[in-house]
Length: 463
Image (cartoon, rainbow, N blue to C red):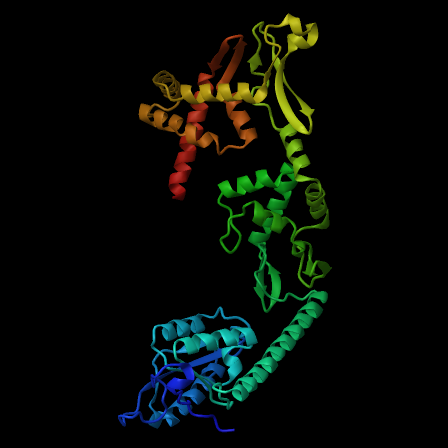
């Protein structure tokens, strides 16, 4: 059937007297120029790299039709509105958005498409578009399908065509889903983002050895730490990312640890099938990691706290000179850590002026003292003098800068590393009823200074 020309809408039809879309001459005898925008779309990207593809064919046919209506004032606009590889079941299309913006700006009078379903395969979406067209007095024309939306019969005709278009889209979707399910059952990779450790070649997952070693290291480190929170903190501080540049934070880490692709399986809707790709993680390591993951996060966190080294172990002494040993107790599911006097443990509560102290509180006091002392001129000078015995060219400013670097660095260190530095710096902490006496190792200060200067040098080289 020959496609119709744009219909003239009389003012009485819409309650207005303008003659914007008249196809013929107006009362003055002058033909109105009608700006025509061609919209094309193709659902898949297949064939778009060809010299002459489906979008070109649609556009060429629409241009020819517009040229045939030149006597009616139709003119092709310069802009191209081509959506390649975009489904007609959504309105989230770049070219369509540009087209709608130009319509709202009053730059388009007629939208020309090859077929109705190029604009939309969704009945609801199509009605939304038509409403926007009418709101801005824009006409819609399909060059291969004849219909007139100004009367009830034409609107019924259009709705019937759109219903079949939507039915076709849903059937195609079901067919694709069935194909994906069948392929996954055979272990075939069906596209998407390749997991860290793999690369896609000829539509198959191939191991990327460098990244695969990183994945194995992450699994092994998780088994050691038994905490995704601690491991994620390590990875974030190291600025570790996946192959797409996303930081390996806790959310990404959990997805990595639960990805069964790493043991050579393909998963579809929660069901695993043997994959055709090679595994990165052996079953023993996978089972070790997942035995930890199955345990509740709260219980894992409590176990981690229990295994956390006590910062002042072997360094804290009570008023009578006896050592104070780390211990802990659990009440209502919460862990409480203490340092308790050996004298009180052996001779009873009354035998010691200070029987026990909360671990977190005394550790915080000691750390605050260390951080304050490292910034005092006396400690800086003592450290510089001691360090010059092995490094004659060392300047006092270098020592000062290194020790000042300790302040922001401390909070980024893991508990085990904090315990190592405290043991390096602190010779002894004597707990008194009214305060503490803190003695530092000068040799430890010089070692810390050397470490901090070395870390600063590596950072500058990396930058």
